[in-house]
Amino acid sequence: MHTGKLTMFYMATSLAFTAGGIILLYLLWNAVPSSNGETLNAVAFRSVIASLGLSPGLSFTLLTTVLVLEGALLYVAANTGLLGGPAVLANMANDGWTPSQFSSLSSRLVTKYGILLMGIAALFILLWSGGIVDLLAVLYSINVFLTFSLSLTGLTLYWWKHREHPQWAFRLGVSVVGLIVTSSILVVTLAEKFFEGGWMTLLITSAVIGVCLLIRQHYRETATQMAKADHLLSQLPATPVAIPPTLDPDATTAVFLISRSKGAGMHTILWVQRLFPHVYRNFVFLSVGAVDTQSYGGEGSIEGLKASVHSACDYYVNFCHQNGFAAKSYEAYGTDRIAELTRLSEQVHEEFPNSIFFASKLIFVHDNWLTRILHNQTALQMQRILHLQGMTMVILPMKVD
Image 1: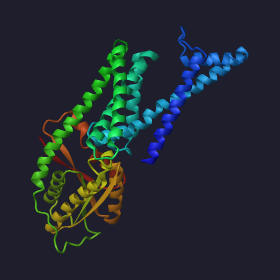
Image 2 (image 1 turned 30 degrees about the horizontal axis):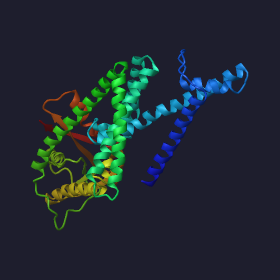
Image 3 (image 1 turned 135 degrees about the vertical axis):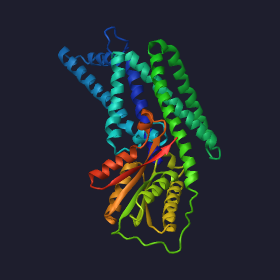
Image 4 (image 1 turned 45 degrees about the horizontal axis):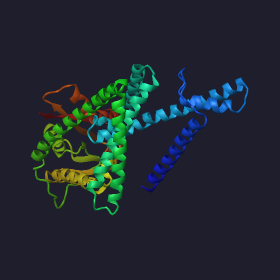
């Protein structure tokens, strides 16, 4: 928290100093828009260099060098969006706004194809705008101040809900003032620049928001269906036994990759017991708690996440013990579920060499391209990873209406 505050302070100070210095240059050298398409920075620096009394050739070289350095700085700044994009996609995926496979930062889908997706979108905007700076500035400013307004709205609501904090009134006031300022700039920009590219910005942004809302709605409907399965299958008795069966590392072992749904986990266990009766002596469960922004304070916490994961693992282990099977569970926590599951799988395979991994995938009655994109990616990625390492993994279906 302290480091974050210092970082924000230094960034605000440096940006304010830079912006103030540029405005001062404009005023001192009377920089005005050029008719030949030069930026105000180019006009200002040309005037500054001309006042030095250098030769024309040296002045041109110096101006070119300054503009090249400025362009390089802008190039680096533009790439920060591509660098931070995968992390934003991962956070949105954890909250259900984008496909869940984007939550895996170790996957090429996020780190490579995610960047390619944003790059292609940026190239499309550049080609559509024809590289016109005025139009790109409108596109940029509207989305920037929309982001600021949404962020400050969330911050305002946060401090309103946490009025028990000693300094809530001051921080709420700061958030409200910032929200008023950014919202005012957003409204004015939309009104003044609507026919100069603002309408296209609204169209593109609304389309992206609409897709995210569609994805979130689908995940909520699926969660409702899975909750019914959880309620039905979690009623099976699973109380601790006094003397649990002993694990045999050399015996055949069924390893289950468990998600947050108890219904899906129990469905997979029952399938294995029905398809392979008396084959597996050991039952091992792997579960990974996804650590995201909601896990730190707020509504949730790391302790709550650990308690939830541990409770689910205990339920599976106790169920197997009651049915006469030796069982054990492994837990891990991290921002990348695929990476943590891979690490646990390698650890378990070393301890139980005669093991086969099992996971479930959802089979929808009304299947379409959206359901195929939004679901079952974790199981498919894990199957590919384990197969490449010489391990066997079986994916079992689970029907969803």
